[in-house]
Amino acid sequence: MPLSPAPIPLLLMRLLFAAIAFLLACCAPLAQADAPAEIIAKAVLLDDKSEEQIALIRSGEPSPELLALLTLWKEGGIFLVEGPEGTKIPVTLEDAKDADDKQAARLLLTRQPYLGPDGKPIRLLASDLNAAETDSDLRSAMKSILDLAGLASPDRSARLQAVETLGMEQDPLRLPALRARISKETDSEIQHALKEAVALTELKDADPATVTLACRALGELGSIRSQDALRLLAKDGHPAARTAQDALRKIEQHLQTVNIWGTLFRGLSLGSVLLVAALGLAVTFGLMGVINMAHGEMIAVGAYTTYVVQCIFGPGLELSPFGIHIVLPSMKATGWLYDSYFLFAIPLSFLTAARAGVVLERCVIRFLYRRPLESLLATWGVSLVLQQLFRLTFGANNVQVASPNWLSGHWLINDVSLGWNRVFVIGFAAAIVLGVFLLLARTPLGLLMRAVMQNRTMAACMGVRTERVNLLTFGLGSGLAGLAGAFLSQIGNVGPSLGQSYIVDAFMTVVVGGVGSLFGTIFSALGIGMADQALQQILGNPVLGKILVLVGIILFLQWRPAGLFVTRSRSLDN
Image (cartoon, one colour):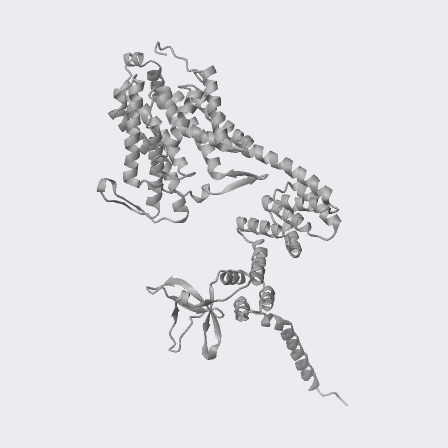
């Protein structure tokens, strides 16, 4: 009997239904996976059940949305409002506030506006709401999730901070994540921190052999952060105590090396600051022979110019000197445009201070050449007048100049921290020295300046306009002081007495190097800076270190009154 064709389509239909059922069964877990907002909403509603809340937040994939909601909850940004029949509804508030300080509310679960019975969006006052509560265990779990997620953050500083935090916690549960990250990390500094974090965590291992290997690894890494943990291990009579002691000795040797290089770098940067501050004085005092006690105020002019430029790029500035109300415009710049204000402030600081120096030379200094005592007293009076002018214009209090982002960080090389602002001042000083040298040695103006300063009468007989050369030379020295003020504004506050903090050190640097010697000023500034930082490091007392530097300078000048480099001249006056 022939078979009927009917069962074949029926069989195919059954196979098709079976395949669909199989696919639905496989995809069911994916469809049932809770979204981050749903996980947080469920956890928030579980008051006083921290164990269940911790289990819930750990069940979710650490996506950016989940991490953002956890951060919001941890910072008290999720609130519970009364719903119908006494239910609790988790909501968040938008940033914008109205005239009554009320904010628009959104449902945490759907991110839709929270509507009232009339169907209109409700605005709430944050102070009237109850924030979703957290206890110490829940906050610790949140921090753990956020730190682990920070290991894969695209931001380098966030990754480094997360690694250091996890290492100091010494939680064995974090070891798999830390070890897995080592092979994926491309930054050498973060790789070093990951190895250090793994070894620190392994100190809590129950196996003495693992602890011994961890101690040896920390010693090889020169881990400064692990010193406390290793000291505790060495005192407990642990089987790895001797290895811990060996590791501590290696770390101490590494720390000594770090201190030596750090002292050299700080001494070099301090010497560069002194050099920048003294370079203008090396021109006005060293070359022209004018004792300008107002040189410090030229530094302050450059610093205040930087402050004004920053305010113009930022929020603007209102001044009231002598009762005259002046409003400077605001560019309201942000981002890279605001950070570029310092690039404009550098040349403006030079020009402003140079113009102030030209006015000072025309009004006072030109009448006091070859009269050192009178020039000292006159410029000291000018400095007092300028300080009072700063107080009347900008106020008696210091003003803050914010450093741009590209000067706010640091480099870390083998645990030696190199601040970008200090690196900048070293390069800044080198560029200024090179520029001044080329000006004096390779330009017609430099030739005229050197001729007038060596023998003013002979230069005048040769047709050189000595008065104009004096004007330009003094303007150059004052402009260099303004550049010093521009940089000093980046490492401290700006006030009316800013220049007085550097005028004595600047004169001391010029005299020790040799009056009139540019190279002497360079060697003197770097030597004084190195000696100051080294003595502070050795003695552990900054005040005593500065006193010994001053005593050393006095003894040096007793032995060599002309300084390191004596300027030779054919002038009978010398």
